[in-house]
Amino acid sequence: MISRKHHKTVFSFFMALLMSCIMSLVISIFNVGLVTNIVSIWLKAWSFAFLVAFPTVIIVSPIVHKLVSLVLHEQEDNT
Image (cartoon, rainbow, N blue to C red):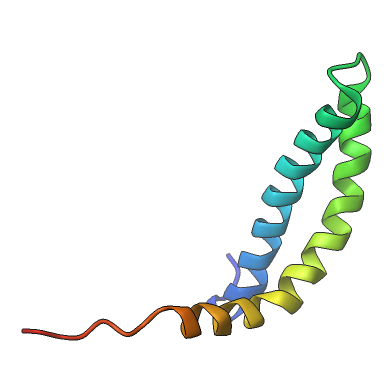
């Protein structure tokens, strides 16, 4: 197993992997339809999308965490 200290990187890897998979499939079908070679078109698009998505998630996630902190307020403890 991978050490817990690599949580952010492993999370980013899987987030990028799954998001690029889903988005590249949807966009490929939207652009060319359900053609006979859609799987090869999608896999080519997915490999490129993942190469962009993984470093993007690594770079953008700290910014997103800060934005979320600005938008959400702390829960008041009324106990």
